[in-house]
Image 1 (tube, rainbow, N blue to C red):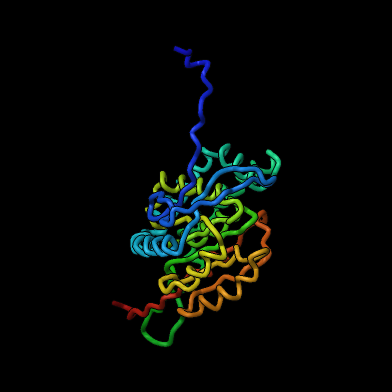
Image 2 (image 1 turned 90 degrees about the vertical axis):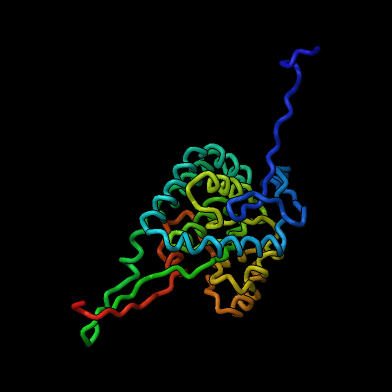
Length: 294
């Protein structure tokens, strides 16, 4: 018999699947597509999501919305902070994936991953502060208290940035979930692998299944179904910029069918400090009246 030490080991190749409802299914269509690095070299095969996969993701997000939105703001913040802890533990893996996908130097990739982790922490910290910023005690002429309270809008579809595989993804997903919304995110078509690896972190964290769902595939194929879905309450068209910019107007028109909130695409520099804009875009305001002295 040959010595096992002399036999070349066959590496276990990773299968990049979808992330829907806390599970990792293949596309129901059985399709996949080749993902290449910045030089065109083969990296992996990723699942090519279909219309049904998008519908399943929306169903999972809607199912998770009740529990996630009902959780205390403090609890949501702690759950999201746990994601950052796990990201920190896999920092080297994410740096390698970002470097291969985006063509960055090793130092640049590490900086990008560090910024993504810090940004996740920043948004997690806002979970129990949004009510103070967005809410109000309103003056009224009468023996009543009148309060304006922020509430999540529901299921948010996110077309993630095409060029920023991790930092951009975190920058559009985290502000949607921190306030109690659930998300269906379509990862970058060209470089989806860091987003799929992030979904593995989500699966092993305390984030309930269905709160964040990750699809991979063709933006032009999946985005219209998300924009026109009647159970999606808001959509971020960030990833419909650049080469996919011609999609943006059509997606906005489709979103108008059920009066979705629409965040329009813009040229974003994801390295700049974040603002409250994306968090506030997915909030409704509930007004409560209460008799004074009772």
